[in-house]
Image (cartoon, rainbow, N blue to C red; front, side, top):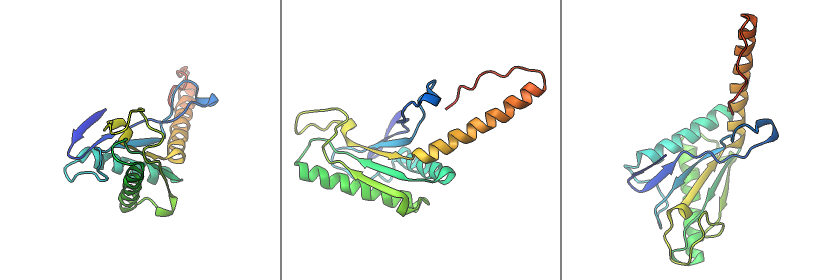
Length: 172
């Protein structure tokens, strides 16, 4: 789901990988924000960007753990300019998450500049997917999945106690 509002497109993204215990689904581990080329902040009217930051902070509050912020930039400008831009985006996201209650010492920054592009392009191409910043919270999402599974087990036991057969667990 994407929506353009003001200066950033934000995406609630599920970026996880499948483990053997969860082979039936792909668990989420974070959120992503796509910045316009050359910009390092959410615009004041970019409500969806703010909502993504709020969701990331709320997820962290539920499960804690490390928050990994990965920033990238497109190939417009020099490699040094792209690296500086991703450093600015990372600092901005750290500040915004801290303002929302995320412990700054739990935030790990990975600024990649115009390396590791989501969609490889030639130089000087303003590809939106290459301006992505990911906010990954694997421990918090794992804690949420554990709570969900424990709630299922409690419900399934009650169903069995009432003589009903509960469906198999299908959640992440």
